[in-house]
Image 1 (tube, rainbow, N blue to C red):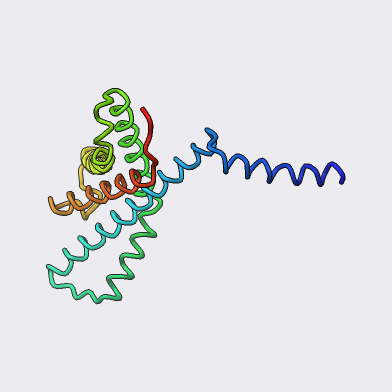
Image 2: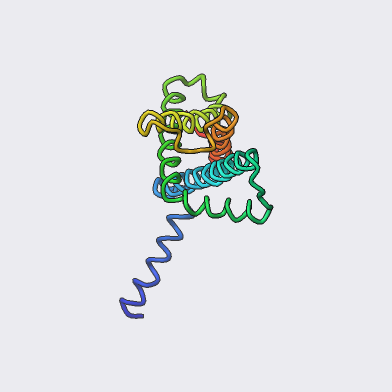
Length: 174
C-alpha cells in the first residue's frame, strides 16, 4: 500500500477510536449534543406554545381559525422564530445549566437533587430571558408570554429542556 492509502485508513480509524473511547473530546461532543437536544426541545415547545397563545387571543376576538390554519401558522412561527428565539433560548439555557453545575460543584449535598435542579435551571433560564427582554425593548416581545399563564407555560418549556438534559446526561461523579 502507498502512503495515501495508509493515511486514508488511519484517519477513520482514529475517529472510531476517539468516539468509542471515553476521551475528553468524545465526552465534550456528547455534552454538546445533549445540550443541543435540550435547546431544540425547548425552542420547539416554546415556539409552539407561543403560537397557540397568540392564536387563542385571535380566537377570543372572533377570528375563525381552522385546524389547517393553526398548523400552518405554528409551522411558520417555528421557521420565523428559529433565527432569533433559538439562539436566545440556547444562551439562556447555557447560562442556567452552567450556573446549576457550579452550584452543585460548590455545594456537594445538592448532587442528589440534580434531577430537580436542571429542570428548575431551565425554567429559571426561560423566565430570566423573558423578563430581560421586557426592559430592553419596553414590550413583551414574545406575545405568548403576555399573560401569566403564557409566561408560566413558556417557562415550563425550559423545564422540559432541563429534564431532557438531565435524562441524557449520565450520572456524574463529584
